Length: 164
Image 1: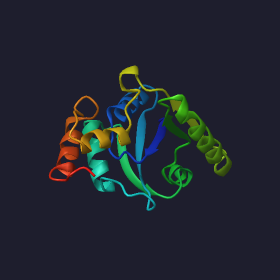
Image 2 (image 1 turned 135 degrees about the vertical axis):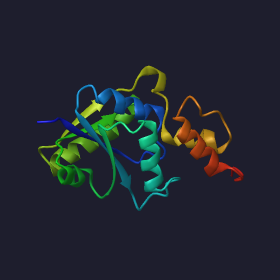
Image 3 (image 1 turned 90 degrees about the vertical axis):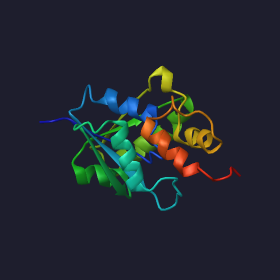
Image 4 (image 1 turned 90 degrees about the horizontal axis):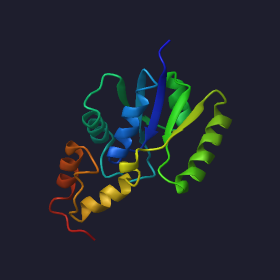
């Protein structure tokens, strides 16, 4: 039976840190579903469709990676797609408390759902979507932080806009 896991997040936008986790996870899962969360409470820079397109570009359309948008709880999406393992990245100690609480809540809501934490590669451990957006907004160099397609999309989003 193939090993399938879910990696869910907003990916607004996908960074080299996310892509690193995706690539490395494929050494122990046969297939990875990247779930793009659609959160009505947030105002993302990119639409769900744009984020999905950028993820596919960043993973170079690897056939082992399926990209899907979802609304609602991760546990419900995991059940819908038939996975029992959720992957989460931990960049720093500050991430741990939030991720630990989420893992425990997910286990409460769905006792069979396991959470596996992965630590990023050292060279991308400081990269976050919010930092990338901020650097891009002010015209900083983002080329080492994201896939070239993502860098182009960010530049296009911020072209002609004056930073506030």
